[in-house]
Amino acid sequence: PKMDSKVGERLINQYVSRVANAERVSQTTEEEIDPIGETILELRKYMLSLEEDSEKVTMGRKLCKSHFLKSALYWSSLLKPAVVNAVGQMWSIVLTCGAFSREIDDYIRKNPEILIILIKGYKKKELALSMGRILRTAIKHECVQYLICNSDLVKRKF
Image (cartoon, rainbow, N blue to C red; front, side, top):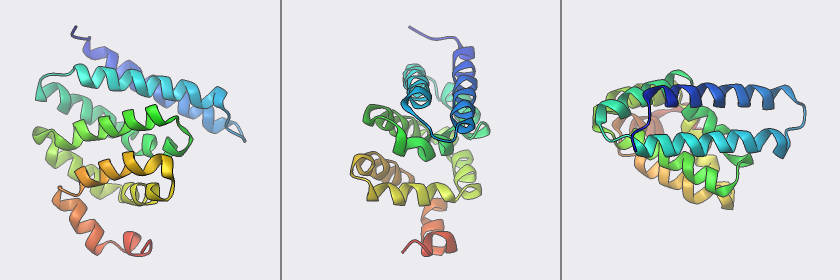
């Protein structure tokens, strides 16, 4: 069944609010992390329901504007494996939507720390598969190839 377009926006706002709540505490516990994971799983379900490229582009723009894509990677080390997998699936949808290619390239170019998070993901066994999947999909984009070859930020990690 097709979901209302407002659902995606509501879920992003819910995610942002839950992350803000988790960031307010000095020691993040499952009490703060689990609701973040639940929202990510709902967002993935919503994204998988999108059939038209135009819907994916609209959602991709909302995910970029809210910095959900970068934030979800950042929080991945604290999330359950199924949620990390969901983050990977959402990245894959955005990265493979041809109509959104230029915009996701701009987003990654403006946020090169995304590559560092993905590269660091290989150090944690429970993240390696999902982070590797995202990185392999992202590397098909010319801007990611350029950043890997020419970014001082990335070079410092090797």
